[in-house]
Each structure stands twice: as structure tokens, then as C-alpha cells.
Length: 115
Length: 111
Image (cartoon, rainbow over all chains, first blue to last red; front, side, top):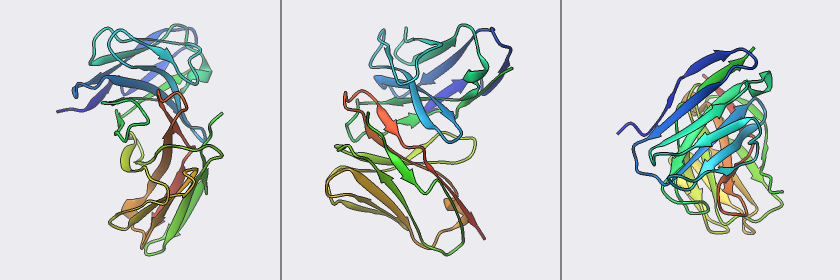
């Protein structure tokens, strides 16, 4: 039982390049989330999914796209990376939707630098 | 807009000291959660408080949910270096679709 895994762990991009971050969970959770964490800003929700084939915008969705083709996977895409997207990205999953007293399980994060 | 304000932002103490960190909002939350995040890792859930006035204890950590369900506190007794990390409070947004996180309190405990 690996929980939530993220690939890659580190990545450096040049402005304008594209990339996809992969999140996988083996807990059969319905809900999955992508956050970014910046110094002094806490965790901010980018996009989330309430089930296979569904996605929705969070607090800071601009410049990102997501897909949930399989229940266990949640992909975050950057079509044209910008320096403002330099951040640590965390994926999380939960069995039930908030405000249930449920645990969100987080992955170890992907540290992205855009030059 | 729902906001969770955490204070202090940074806290540096010696081993054995006691401390309290706060999570405040002008909004009512049906429940609040506390997570701890260690450097290079994702946040890990410590506790969920659901009832106004509730107090939960987890070894040396005591969590309290305000009577009006707008605030919460985390008290650590006799802090240890292993308590070092970023402490985050979180509550569900009004739509009930995701969690809102505070900006966190960075705790450093030195021996």
C-alpha cells in the first residue's frame, strides 16, 4: 500500500515548456486534489476531482489543466510554463468529500522550477 | 471569502517549553483539521475537531475547537525537537468540495 505517489519529484523547465505531473493513489479514493505551496502562502487548491472523469477548478486554476481518466490517477498539466508557476506541487486524495471528518492523504510533492 | 488566519507565523523555542498556536476565522466551520508537515514531505493529519468547545489530546498535543466553531488552538506541552515542522489548520469551503488551509505556523524546537 503505497498511498499517494507523485512523479517526478523534481523538475526544471524553461519558460514556455510544457509538462505533466502524475499523481497516483492506491486507496480507491473518489476525491483527488492538486495544491501548490509557496513560501508564506500556505496550500492553495488548483483543481480537484470528485470522481473518475470529473474535474473542477479550485482557487488558482489559471495556467493549469487536469484530467482524471482513471480513478486512481490525477494528472496536472502545464501547457506553457511561466516563472510564476515555480512552486512545490502536492497531490492529495480522500475517501469522502469535505466537510466529512475524513483524512486527506498527501503525496510527497513535486518541486518545480521554471527559469 | 473564507479565510483561516494562523498565528504566530514563526515560533522558535527551546526543548521543554510550552507553546500555543492559533487558527482564527470570521466564518463558522463544521469541523477543523490540524496537519503537520515536515521538510520535504506532504502534510499529515494530526486531528479533526467537530464539536464546538471540543478538546482533544494526542500525547503532548492538545487541540481545542472554539465554542462558536470559528477558531481552534493547538497547545504543545514540553516541546521536543521532533515537534519541529509546519503546522497547518484546515476547514471545508462553503461548497463542501475542498479544504481551505491556513498559511501555517513554522515551529522550530532546539535542544
